[in-house]
Image (cartoon, rainbow, N blue to C red):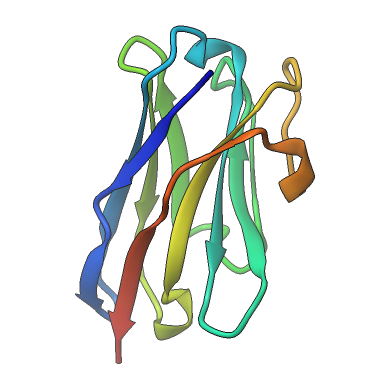
Length: 125
């Protein structure tokens, strides 16, 4: 079983950067695809980005492509989300999640088995 803990959220001005981290406590981190989702106030939780278990494949929502970068360090049981050129519309609670789907990428919430508690990102204009 994986326990996921996000960190790195906070308040930043538009155009700024933040780096989120998600640390996993289980011993099988490298067997999971990892994803980041976000939920803005009053909205549904949306897919942001995913990375496969080896780190060799990634995908991004169109709204963040070119600005956000997902990466992972399997030796440290950690996945990262580097967010650059932040916009007020990026304001949301960001969740990391783990999916046991082989070497694929997960895009849907129901593909992900384990979830973190979320970290707030607020971008001021």
